[in-house]
Length: 188
Image 1 (cartoon, rainbow, N blue to C red):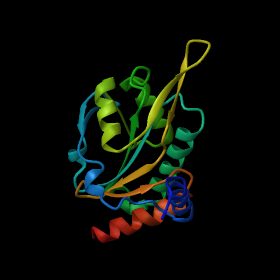
Image 2: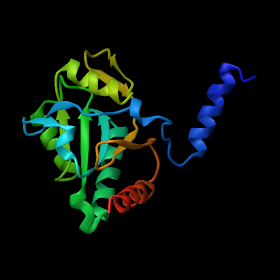
Image 3: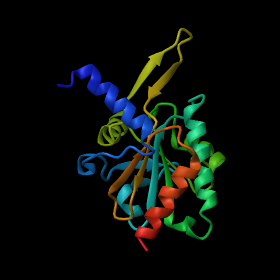
Image 4: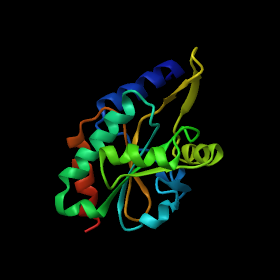
């Protein structure tokens, strides 16, 4: 018999030892969504059909995790050379109050010219976060500002719009690059 505490420990051990965490049933996770891009245009995930998508959730005021992951994502995109046009990086803000399309435009361009920043209403962003099981929570600070704690997985969505893998934060860009190349090779 496995008691709940040990089950959690086994899950944590598995995800620590595993190079990539994938879900047993990706049909329950992910899917199409509608938001607004950093140019203030409507955006739907389905418009990227035919491309491999690297999807990350965060916010522009994030002090460390988001800039690190976006820099790693940009490094992966830069290493793809002739295959880069087959891959699209997306950054969905979890802070639509502060992360307007204008703010996102400057932020994502800092990392990579082709990266797309996405925002929407609080409800729209919350819906997309639920679809991808992104946990986040706003924490008020004494000075009246706030920070957001959030999960930091990278989602790899294949050219048919199906979630292929969930990569935990902290893995080296070379691992993500190998996965991306593998998915590109599968797609021909």
